Image (cartoon, rainbow, N blue to C red; front, side, top):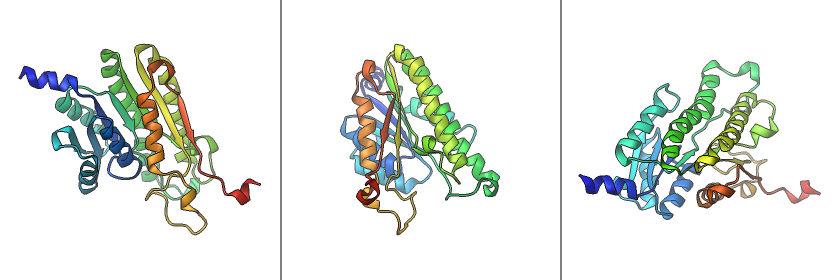
Length: 247
């Protein structure tokens, strides 16, 4: 029994939400390469199983948790399951998020409004609060939130989505200032358009100039590998400009 407890303390553990595909999958793969045990959270089992396969980790080192983070008790259920299995948390990557296709404010449905607020803002705040208590007690850890340049640009027909991402940026900056003296790193990665399934096909978009999930994962690992004293509060990732439009 003591050997099992010692093993729990020895291994470093990362939680990645939205780990079934896209950015979350790319982040999980990089964390596994860096030696982390993983908790992979999302709503779709086959996608999570594929992510676990790609990490190369054994099931006991890559815990799959099927969870709906929009549910009121979702974040606490996920966190409790993680701690029961691993006994600690060293890195939290709040990646899960959602936004509908561009929709005028007055045409946005109440269910879509509630889902964006719950998944993009409430859930990462709730998980960060739970993680902070564990990490402060450990004297170390990293909380990394994935936002969007929409939170800065505030594009029309994305008012609610932009508001949730702006809120996540502000939350991250406040947590950075609050927790840095406890040895806990907090950072927000702010990418522009990322080439994932969430961006529908559009002939006007050159997907080769978008940011790749692997590039976002590289930014996450920059925070993970940074000493606490020099952890960046923000990392902004801009897509490549069209040379014709840049003139």
